[in-house]
Image (tube, rainbow, N blue to C red):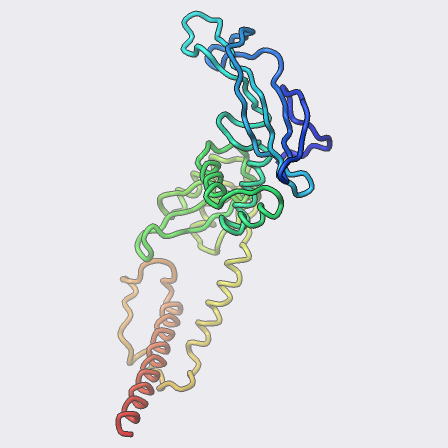
Amino acid sequence: MIKNTKWALGSGLELLGSECRDGRWTVSAVGRGSARCPGCDVRSSRRHGWQVRLLQDLPAQGTPVTLRVRLSRWRCQKQGCARKTFSDRLPTIAVPSARRTCRVADLTRLFGHAAGGRPAERLMASLGLPQSDDTILRHLKRHAGGPAEAATVRVVGVDDWAWQKGFRYGTIMVDLERREVVDVLPDRSAEATGHWLAQHPGIEIVSRDRAGLYAEGARRGAPQAKQVADRFHLPQNFQKAIEQQLSRAPRPNSQPSPSLTEAEPVILAEWIGHGRQPALVEHRQLGSIGRRAVNTDKFNQVKALQLSLVVE
């Protein structure tokens, strides 16, 4: 949102007056001068008529403010122009057909993004900007669906995500400074990651998980960038390491876990994805065996209680 230290309606408007009625302020203004046709860009001074636009503006000490603007409608003076008449434009104040000023629209989008629909509706009503939750969500969707501004990505976050969990994965690229998704790659590979990073030479930092393919892709596509591990994956990896170590420990209220030789054989050739090392395969199998033993013990306890109730 653009800040302005001086109160002003905006360029192209002349203030007529203001009045407070029924707990609302109404600020009246009028457009001045001539205008250019948006179709042929020819300036016209032939006025066709008038029209009035009512725009919601920023509140005054918590009191809602309505901007009542009287705009001219002009005749296009160029022969053959598709537009016969056109009205004044307010590019710095409000977009065409909008019912709110640009500054109010920016606040609506920020509140909606931070709080959501109904919480933002309550917050904005208390600030003197009453809007429905549907209106707030429409602003968010309109902004998200608009053309993205071309910006240089400096800090990018790389992670995988599932098109179909357990079968097909893609790669998501996030601008961590702007907190916006930049691109989504159809697959998870070092080649695709390196090719995307090579197309963005301004990248200085690559934040990724500890997968080797993303490290290789960053080395290929952005050798000048510094690779770091994000805070999400560090606790996640630590948690997995603890679970793998504790999977060997005996569990309370459970039957002794069978040894690895008594368990079902593990075929390394059929193990798909990360973790093809025998140690990781053994840890995962031990964890599965331990969880199965705990669930079996709980089931036996429930059946025993059920039988005791029937006997009583």
